[in-house]
Image (cartoon, rainbow, N blue to C red; front, side, top):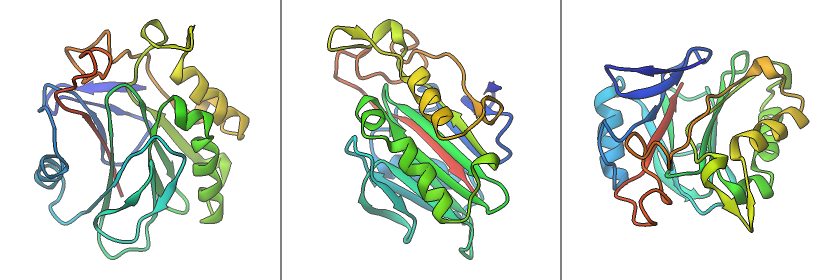
Length: 214
């Protein structure tokens, strides 16, 4: 179940036994990657390699090689073979942040997933990468964070449910219901809690920070 941490001002999944969070604007209005990195450094152990991307609404999944900004894409994946902890983050302001974790092989991924990412099958590509790294579909946990709701997202004249379609794509790949955690959010309706591209008339004052650490 996705719950709210009153002290930290972020949402988290009690099924995902790793340090992670979906930020709210009650923490800060993060406008730059430097601000996000500073926040994470202060709130993690101080030794984590913090990794992120320039996001472009693609289906590109990038394996972590170096600390900090490396390439262009919309998903980061990492297997625990590095000498120090790794923190992956993605930024959102209506799109879905999705975390993946495979406990046996110690693999994590953080994905920025909107309409374009779903159409380009970013979820399938992420899961294929897990398999290449030795992960098994039966032991992957997926957590879907806050995004815009069907009530406020009209795509080409049709109301579109990002969360529902993400769940369907996970299920198509063999991920069972008990492996998926989510909660009904709408970043536009809940603009007091989350940054929203549509809720702020496409003039966003910041982006939501979504991180997972291994």
